[in-house]
Image 1 (cartoon, one colour):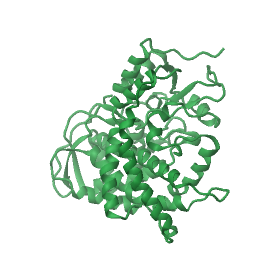
Image 2 (cartoon, rainbow, N blue to C red):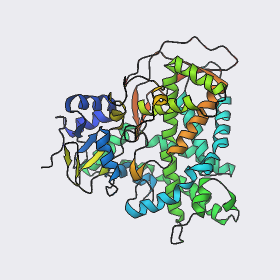
Image 3 (tube, helix red, strand yellow):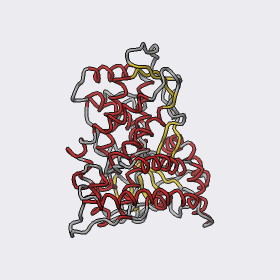
Image 4 (cartoon, one colour):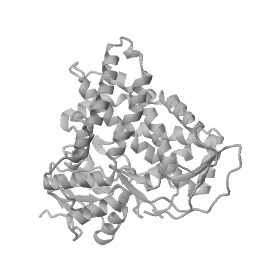
Length: 450
């Protein structure tokens, strides 16, 4: 007999509030009470969401390709991303577009963007005031936005670029607050109004700019020679020789913006936060960067450990198209199921001292396929995962080669929600000096808090 795992006794409204305001504490309390699998009820959803943390259950979920998307993904994303977004399509349409979009994010094509990322990071660093406290998260957002504008959108018109720099952060800011998410869920529950309607004018202004860029690219006979991702999308053809419409290309650009801008900026902010709280790790990483180690061994381990301990996107779920039976768990078709990524990443059986920041653990052994899933898994694994890790390596290397960083607070950041991400509540406050200036004294490792 198929039965869902146990659920907290609170009402859907209370569970939703706990998830929006204290997500890690909420998941931890459920793990303590119910173990590896439990159900939660969110406001506005008819069905519970089952959360899993066992890697074997996650493997079974992700390797069955017939499972679809849970409806929650489209609630806030569809009005902004558009119906052609690769994140929202399913089945053959999703796979066809994924295949079309994959080449720019792998191999030599992806590595050709390294110089762009480094140049953007260097310009950003030049704007930092010496030894003045500032939040690194907004600065990393500025970096990743510029990378999107250059490497993805390929904007060369200065006026259009400035207008996009003004409007895109407004869109990202408007869609990121937990309050908006709560209003969206309330409107879904009571079928009254649309909290996202106010974004219509802003989205239309951005669309006008992007569609003009797309039309200009199609009219340029030399666009085949360009390396930005927009040019590659314009030139790409499906197996039957057709191509994406202007509107669909627009949807993919917005998808790459929302999926690759905020997430990478947040991952970078968390990595700086963790390094600042662990001076020995920061010193070891800086020494490796100074030695110009082409293997970037410790740098890669630092990024892996940061993404383990502070996964940016907490859920990557499916709606079951067939029954799921694994390790005593039996879930019927139609159930909404998701890995609780942070819970998987903090399992003591996978990671001894699971709440400790120890990049060395990734020097000792590679992560298991379904025990380290910051980019999701299966056929819907993040398209830009390799690009995000490349961008993180280049930005971290560029910053630490040129600046000496010190924390502006003795406490680690707490987690807050921004749209679908877990972000640092205060943006990670720090101070920065040129590397030839003396850094402030090292502090002992600080305790991580949720």
